[in-house]
Amino acid sequence: MFTVFAQTSTHIAVSLPAWLDLASVAVGGISGALVAKERDLDPIGFVGLSMLCGLGGGLIRDMAMQVGSVYMLDNPYAIPATAAIGLAVFFFARMFEKVPNLLEWVDIISVGLFALGGTDKAIVHGLLPVSAILMGTLTGVGGGMLRDVFLGDVPRIFKPSNYYAVCALAGSTTYYALVKWIGIDKYIAAAALMAVTVGLRRWSLSHDATTPSSHDLTPAIKRAMGRHRK
Image 1 (cartoon, helix red, strand yellow):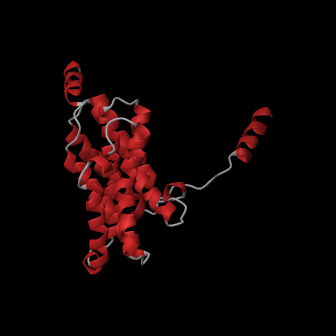
Image 2: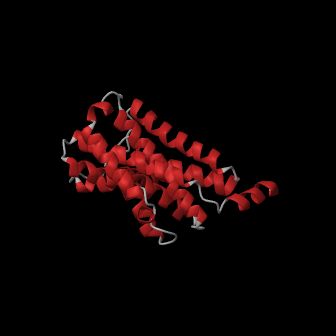
Image 3: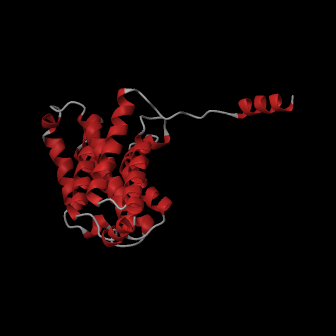
């Protein structure tokens, strides 16, 4: 037990490699551009949605945490990469039509990667467990939330859906628990986060499992109280 915690203290403050952040930006950018393709937007729309989905989650995280740097402003590749991805999907859309269900896969993979980046940064900077998991969840769904707002839709995380935000929450919780409480290597924990996030999403889609809409428990409580009084 003491060995586990000793190992945890040596690696917990070390961030994951920078290429993982850039990978999440790239995958998120593709997700946004594919949505722009579905909506038949112009080149500005493709670039705009690519940047929102590729950079929005990290921006929300960095603004909320106010520690460290703002990734999209300090990394020289983040903004050009998302802009280039948006234009690439616009001009070569047929290449992206060959992969079935591409948007579904890219969307949830980007959620997992962003949840990983958000949770890890919160751990590195010593946030409380609830705060770290919240940062991971917000980073995971933030880009999609901004995309929906800019398109004039109710954000998906606020509607009954196939476990979209639940996947980010479950993945962030898994990563935090494995790294902070068990002391597992961050790369193994990252793989577990991706497996939980993507696996839960695919399960919800294949079984058509959705989060519930509002349900009033007042009548049931009143009936239970009435039986208790009798």
